[in-house]
Length: 214
Image (cartoon, rainbow, N blue to C red; front, side, top):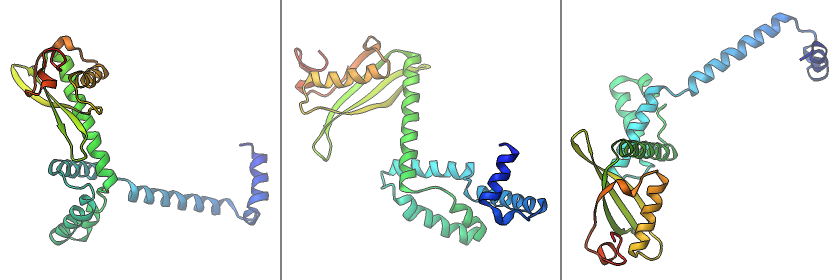
């Protein structure tokens, strides 16, 4: 900004500072820089805190507990244990671990997407795969399509969860096929590389005319 404009701003907006010398402004700048660094140090979350947050989120997901358990039980319990064994300073470090229900939910979603991407990358590298397909109903009464994938990776047979998709109102063989076909297309996989399909004995799956396999 031009010096003339700075001077006009000083006189019009900060007239009470006109008589202050340069030393005053230098002290003010140093004070603000120190406050900024102090605030950054307090707010910044360390890599270890982030790692701990992900580990706790994984444990919550594996045990299928509510996401709020991290902030309501796990964090207070860890806080008391660390305080007893290592003192107040260690307790303050524990409090920096982000474990709110929104954070746990976000961590679980991120890990889920990462696992899905790893499975897809493996599928694209080794091409051939087999599918295990099953249709079930959740607690709300909606039909869900569960799909597992099996492939050979470096002479080892690997099996992973592939996807879970909500089926439309009807659960005919062509409906199941449409849902799975759309998902395969969305992840750039071809039916040409599918060498086997395993299902239950339901007519919608095994029917010779309108079944999913046919």
